[in-house]
Image 1 (cartoon, helix red, strand yellow):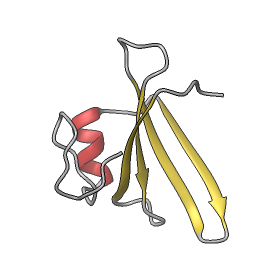
Image 2: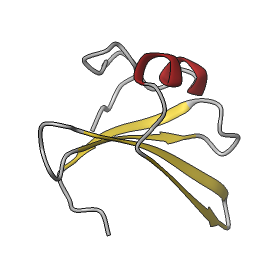
Image 3: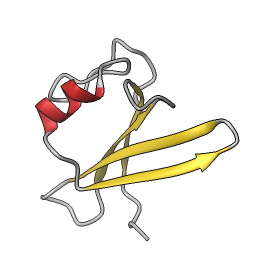
Length: 79
């Protein structure tokens, strides 16, 4: 989990970057997960690691679907 906006992924993406920069650098995600809560809509762009069966890089976007609010590497199977 990246904790600060100064932390970068290997390709140079950080919290606060735009969705468009993410798509330019990483391309189309393997999966897009959207959920609606009382606070609004949450969108996560997920990129599967081709070298590992259960490894995903996940980018959560803000409620307006414009900026990256968190970045996480997951090793949990997708359900």
